[in-house]
Length: 99
Image 1 (tube, rainbow, N blue to C red):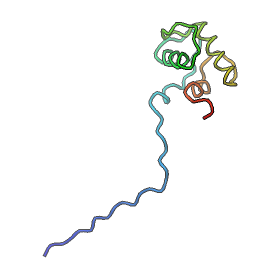
Image 2 (image 1 turned 180 degrees about the horizontal axis):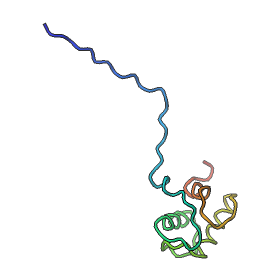
Image 3 (image 1 turned 135 degrees about the vertical axis):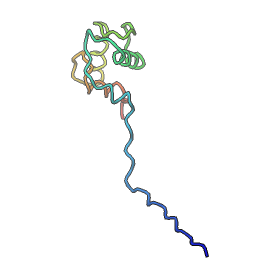
Image 4 (image 1 turned 45 degrees about the horizontal axis):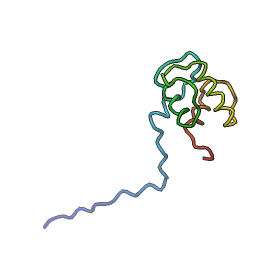
């Protein structure tokens, strides 16, 4: 005589799954300001250009022209105008208007 083992399914969680933040969103939290260089600056430049804020070199260097573009972006989005890309500005760069 063989024994049958009952395979019980684990109950599904009723808790809704929290969305995972991308690695990009987790790393883009440092405040950037004029004189900074590197990949985070390049990511911000790419996003500013994508959103129509141009007039600076897309080269990974945070220069005065990029600062002007950031200030225009901040003004348009109703953010505190600093010219720096702080966590609030990062969030706004990667959030659709009206979301």
